[in-house]
Length: 60
Image 1 (cartoon, rainbow, N blue to C red):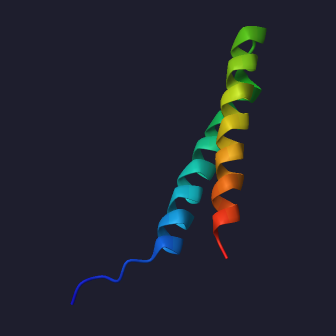
Image 2: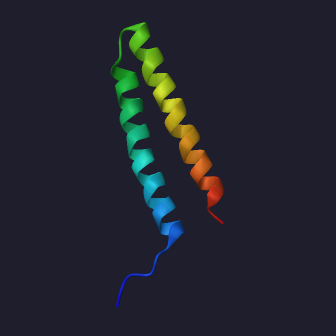
Image 3: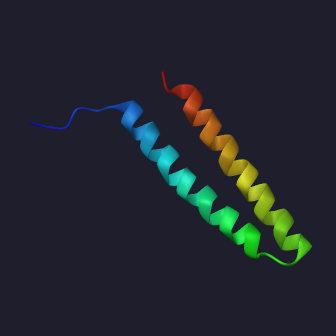
């Protein structure tokens, strides 16, 4: 028997991957010393957090 397609599980998996990425970005942000590096990492983190929030809104 084949696996049943579950879009919620797929969205949750995407969220988990993005949360791992966000944690890595926060760690890099703490270690960043140059202001331009911090700005780039902060922007990346904001984009990842926005994507996480967008995916969470799709869940019931």
